[in-house]
Image (cartoon, rainbow over all chains, first blue to last red; front, side, top):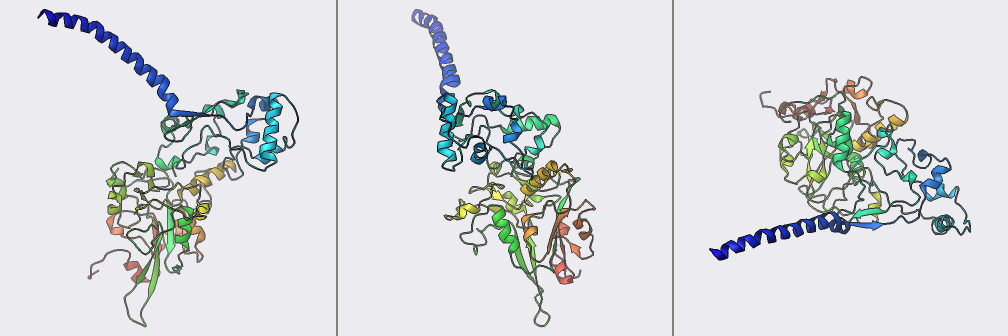
Amino acid sequence: MEEKRSNSAGGVGGMALFALIGFVGALVVGWGIFPKMLYSQKTQPIRFSHTVHTQLGIECEQCHHLGPDGRFAGLPSTESCAECHGEETGDTSANGKEIDKFVKDYVKTGRQVPWLVYQYQPDNVFFSHAAHKGFECTKCHLDVAKTDTPPPYYENRLSGYSKDTMKMWECERCHASMGTSNACFVCHK
Amino acid sequence: MSGHKMEFPITWGMVIDIDKCTGCGACMASCQTENNVEPQREASNKLRATSWMLVYELTNDKAFPNHDIAYLPRPCQQCGNPPCVSVCPVIATDKNENGGIVSQVYPRCIGCRYCVAACPYHVRYFGWYDPIWPEGMEKTLSPMTSVRPRGVVEKCTFCHHRWTQAKDAARVAGKDPDNLDDGAYVTSCVQNCPSGALAFGDIKNPKHKVHELVKSPYAFRLLERLGTDTQVYYISRREWVRKLGDNYLKSE
């Protein structure tokens, strides 16, 4: 009896300690280690500064516009960038070097820049930019207009999708609050 | 969901004139390329091959000189009361959207094939193999339709992606996306039919020509007595063809 009582008295403190260690450990793994393991971090091939371009008075729609048939044209091609950046500048500033890198690697070789699209959707999703024209771009997209260096791109190691890809529940929640249909074929193909 | 008919303000319908169909198969070929159906490895194996649009040969079973044949193209009939929807245990297929097109969501499908068994028109196909495009042919893949993996059921969607594109084009042109012009949205098979046997449009819109075509005295639907209330109509001036559209007793 004596032995048993002393055991249980020591067990309460010990158990609380172990529970605390376990709890803190779970938080560290769940909030810190696992998300880092799940996503691989990538940087854009060219450090494109949206701030520099918006300060010049260029509107979002000048580069990211709808086509005449209503399809979203997405990101500008190397050719449209080359309308301004056709030649190497020889500028030794950080921005100048980046422009020269773009001209040398893509304009001269005629290749397209493999930009990482933060919100690329799976191929069974149809998203109509034309239908959502009434909304501010930043309602769904990162406000890249205020970034000098593009934010890092996080790729889910399991699914291969970007961390910023809009999830189905987000689409559905907005559709429900707007009174828009949530039928499968409204968005899926 | 089951057992009751759904009504939609827009009802996309197809009208197929069997007397104009030459059985050339252009609808089948254009459907396969439009909808990323893999090049069939053994198309003669009818239990394993996939063809969202399929042309059947009909015959009146009479000897010369009374012998006659007809060809019947068969897309998904987009039933008003779809037997496939009521049996789906995971709501991978549903009819709940304006337009009345029976949807099929491949990532949600578990491949149980209840719907394949339930469909009286055999429009549903199970993917028995991983789709493979021989080298070079992957360039024919369309970004407008998703590719199905092995183990899910697929079917004709009335080229639903073309509707979304047509709506976008209308929005940019400042037109009403819910009141498209006749011909603004047609399926791939209708567009590619060389003899003009296929027509497509909104059955409820008086400005669309199918609105009149379905009222033809020669118009009929397949297995109408089942109460499926399909959105695909057939036209034939030959009585024996119309008779083959349903099951009749000898006395009828």
